[in-house]
Length: 310
Image 1 (cartoon, rainbow, N blue to C red):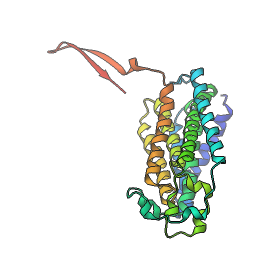
Image 2 (image 1 turned 30 degrees about the horizontal axis):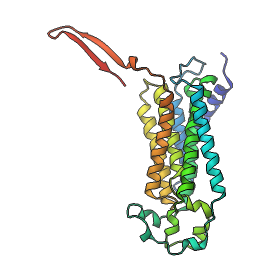
Image 3 (image 1 turned 90 degrees about the horizontal axis):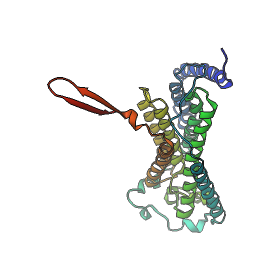
Image 4 (image 1 turned 135 degrees about the vertical axis):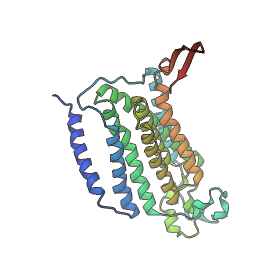
């Protein structure tokens, strides 16, 4: 039997992950920074392994997405152009100074967002970095597995993911530059001036949360991809649930770290979900006829029944 190189890597990774999972059940590290490292990997391994239940020999996979060259060029050009424009604006943005901190206090913030002012945690900040990195990598790991190592289909999925991540990231960066919203920690009366000035101009880029939007883009794209490629799988609900919980945890960590207000996190989740779901849906091949079934009725009632399966 012949194997693609990726299949050999998969076999090795599966054995290593199984060993890790057995070991990690006996070792529990409960501090926050280690939770981000150890338990994120633990959850991600479960997620990837659950995606990988299929015969290992190469098989033909029918991809439910269609590329349109003009559309792909437009999407990628929009992402690239918006990103470059945002970077140019960023270069001209002034740095945060001590004078900018004068007079800032919790009373300046709307009551809905005010609770974030009192938050500050380096552990939560680190945890959000680790968790968003794991989610960012998950679709890239899952794509070849779901496609039975079909290179062409995998490259198509990588292109769709690049469009989703690129549009989300570039638009997020542009909105940050245009809004110049101060981070919650700048209004925290319990922090020193030195702590508030650490991030310099980044502490003026609170709206909206880039970590959260990236996490939800990756989580929703992964779940949508699995949903479309495994339409009969009973694991679809679990994939959605695990992915969204992990993405939501990223948003919570950003709030706990004092980096973002609730409105920043909520907006990030909405925008990320829009791109994570919208790009695959935009390329989805319509199969509406497959969803409908007609059945004649024989008995006391004559006619036919129409059912719809989604």
